Image 1: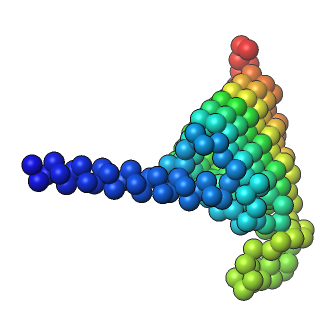
Image 2: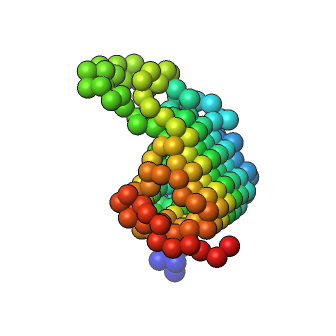
Length: 200
């Protein structure tokens, strides 16, 4: 009897924690009411602009969304799944279409995050420690990433700046994507290359 009561209390507390976490994440983004931020998800809206991150209907976020203050924007469509330990970081613009499945431990980054020049990078890091994230990107290279509808990105994939992934494409596990992926193709490897064409 006591054991059952403790189990019920723990279950209720977990639901309350999940609910509060979902609310806290949604306070930093523009999200459809029926989207879900699970307890393991994280949102770092360093830009402090709610409109810089948009999440569509029936989308589940278990990973991390981060927007740099120097211009990052992110739009995630409807019926998407963003898996555990996924990191989506934007300093430019990331657009993810509808019905996109992103497996665990995927990195999607539209920015180099740091300067190429070693002296500039060193000084920038020191400034970051003192003043926080810069509001101007300076010489940091950024390019948008676009992921089309019905894409499946398997686990442990890295997608770098300037890439467009076409509708219905599949990215095989462990791939490094540095170039555009045509719609209805499967790619894999490091760097990712065409494996086969898929039927539309």
